[in-house]
Length: 191
Image 1 (cartoon, rainbow, N blue to C red):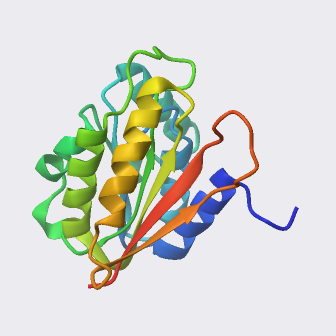
Image 2: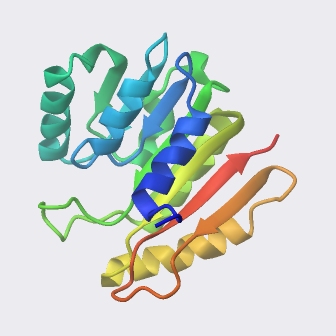
């Protein structure tokens, strides 16, 4: 297949945006796959901040990072992404070049614990202030459950209202997929 699938496309966007000496944020650590991916990219003085409200998610991620000797490149924070500005040092402002959200619930976890549109939008607004010019926020939207569909609709409404002079907004989606396949919204900061 020549077209990139959703998750590989999300990673290619992150890889293009994240420089070894900059900062990345995994706003929904989950099972740590994106945190691990970003930590591998942070080969210089770069750093990754990972947020999740679930201790289980952070422990799995901590173990994965330790196995690969990447723990020193990552700060894990057991908080919701809507609190990220409270935990990101002021010195990082304008140095965040990549951020990712995998919305929905923790795979293999409690499906009643889901991301909420209000907290996600709050986190996006905070990130837009922290992002470097040409920094990218990637949202992987899983909308095959009731709360996911609500979050999808509110996020689409929100991103369509972002000022085109300050951001580019991309939607990447396969249209002929069954079962509400996930899709991506990417936001690039222009100024």
